[in-house]
Image 1 (cartoon, rainbow, N blue to C red):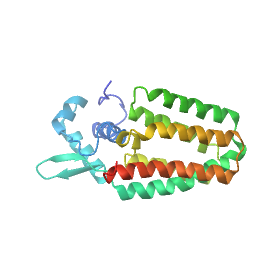
Image 2 (image 1 turned 30 degrees about the vertical axis):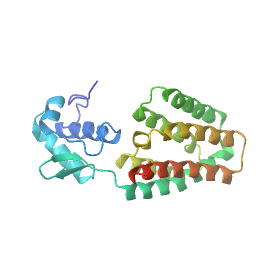
Image 3 (image 1 turned 90 degrees about the horizontal axis):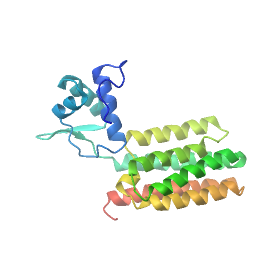
Length: 224
C-alpha cells in the first residue's frame, strides 16, 4: 500500500513527504531521471503542493534531486566516482570486520546468514531487485556484526549508510550479478564455517565487494 501523509502523525506534512519520496529514491522505486511531478505527488500523499515543494528542496540539498530547465525536478543520477570511493572503502573495512569475526563466529550467526542466502536464492526465481538488495544487506550485516571491534563495525555501518545515500543497488542496474553474488556468499560461509585463516576470509570478502563494484561501473560505462 502506498505511503500517505498520515503514516507518521508526529511529523509535519513536508517531513512526511520528504520521508516517502526519499525512501522511494533510495530503494530504486524512483530511478535516476524519474520526474517528480508536484501535483501528482500532492494528490497521492493527500497534501498541497507546498510541503511537496519543501520536501523536494531538502532532497535537492542532499543531492537526491536535481532541477533541469524545462523539465523540473527529477531524481539525480548516481555519481560513479562517489560510488567507486564508497565501495572501495567499504570493501576494506567490511572485509576486515568479517575477517576478524571469523575467529569467533557463532553457529547461530552462520545459520542466520545461511538462511538469508537461501531466501536470496529462492527470490531469484521471480527476481525483485529491491527485495533482493534488502536481503543482501541483512546477510552482510549478520556477518560483520559479529566483529569484536566496535569501531570497525561502526565504520562498516557508515559505509552501508553512505551507499543508501547514493542509492546503491547493483542488482537493479545489473540483475545478472545477483546469482553470482549468492554463490559467492556460499563460498564465504564455507570459509567461515571451516575456520579458515582470517586473512583468507578478509581477502575473499573484499573481493566479493570489489566484484560487485566492478559490475556496476562496467554497466555505467556501457561495457555490459
